[in-house]
Amino acid sequence: MARSKFVYVTYIRTTPEKLWSALTDGEFMKQYWFGTQCISQWKAGSEWRMVYPDGKVSDDGEIIEADPPRRLVIRWVHRTRPELTAEGASQCTMELEPFSSAVKLTITHTIEQDPSKFIEAVSGGWPKILSNLKSLLETGSTALGEVYPKG
Amino acid sequence: MPIIRRIDADSDLLFKALADPGRRKLLDVLHAHDGQTLNELCTHLDMTRQGVTQHLNLLEQANLVAVEWRGREKLHFLNPVPLQQLYERWIAKFEKPRLKAIADLKGKLEKSDG
Image (cartoon, rainbow over all chains, first blue to last red; front, side, top):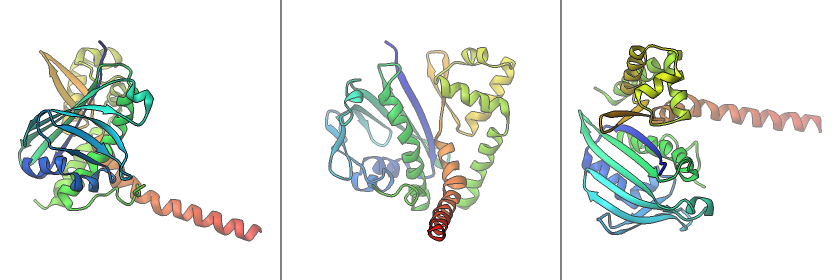
């Protein structure tokens, strides 16, 4: 079956442990994910859900694989836009690899459908989130906080 | 190295990678269809295979292209994260005061008309 996919990479000057914690700590996440947080026990088989600032669950699924601080695989289903939910489950993989004095973070998101409205929708959000995460871990603040006010 | 200087070194690579029409074309080709092999990319471009390989290497160094192996095939994906950072650093912060200036001007002109 045809597949839609994107691969995003960012190099962050931090340690794999700190990056893993930034990716799995809901409260910390809000700082770089525009108030959104992901809630889970972050163990293989545990439930996973993404919660908007207003408390609405936008996406859910479960953790397929968790190998801290190296690899996280999430089964990810969208829940607020029916046309995206209809496309079914996607898979998001986060890989953390030490790279000189930094960590290479690779986010791969795939769905077994091409073209995919879901992939189109999430592909626009990830660069802003990753850019924010990099700024936050490297400098202690996000550049986009002011540009995109919390909604 | 202090963090600001390291960030500048990243920017040098990024601007260098973008300062070539062939490499910008490659980014457009990947934007239209992501995850292509070298052979597939060559069919869209009026460049030698060696030229495309060199451009891809520079784009990879600047982190504008991410690669993934599928067996022995190397797939190339457009990575927009550095462009987002470039936007934040060089566009967003300059845009804000101008948008405010336009809004202020509109306010003033409409007031004096009335």
